[in-house]
Image (cartoon, rainbow, N blue to C red):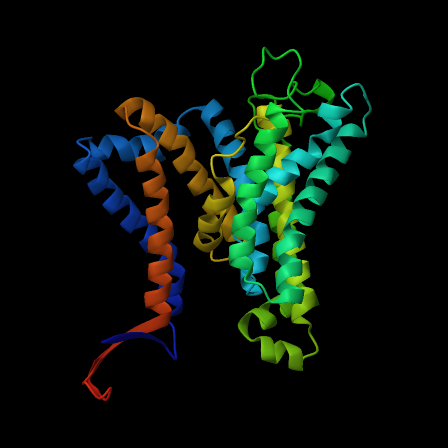
Length: 364
């Protein structure tokens, strides 16, 4: 038996729009079953996930803090994916951006200037872009699979961060804990409003989403991304270079992931530690597809996934469970998003063959 996917000649626009909502509903349904099997009240768990974090002003600020890196990273990934370049290593680019941007507050901590914070953000973008440039170079010039190379580099970044905070960058007055010195107030991203902790990382995310949406909708570069993503051959016929697009999409994606990294460290954590991300770079993949690879849709999807992070913490406390079911819940969302999209755009065809490899039956 052989299973094939056959693209549907016409796709219902209504189903395409409803796909993420169907995926979210399926995730809630099966997530409820998962909590029930764990011996927990599914209604209470889902309330803690999606309602409780919205009831207090301080939790709305925390929601913005969680959503900021998800939106920034996912917006960059949307450009990669729409151009058919599969950057899976945004987590590593996030970490390297945080490291590069932290050079000033950690190594040159005595330098106090209004230029420090803008330079930190630029260094963060540069660090993320350069790290993304490695899989871009490997794919553009050596035809290496960017999925594998970008993913493997995540572990390089994680180990490099761990070495830094336990070694040369460890705080000399930190009682031997693996962390850097706390950032000076002049190197910390300011709060957007005074009623809570939400910092300008969320502002960067909204600005990036609007700019990328404008680029994709109204500029030649956006048209180039779309054409090369749908058909590289058609793009070459139109005079577009797939090699240049690899570099452009990967560097842009890495720069935004790096900006997310230094914004997270400067705005929320205020120092480097062995772990600075709960998996933002991987969760952003879910955000990108849940937002239909549309930057404005990604803003909404980022808030929804941030709600699962914040709500997941509430569920852990209220139900006394580990973080593993929370990660499974988030994984369900990606699974159902991809499954709904696949079934909407493709037909499943099963074919049976006899011993001489001749087709003897077919089910569509």
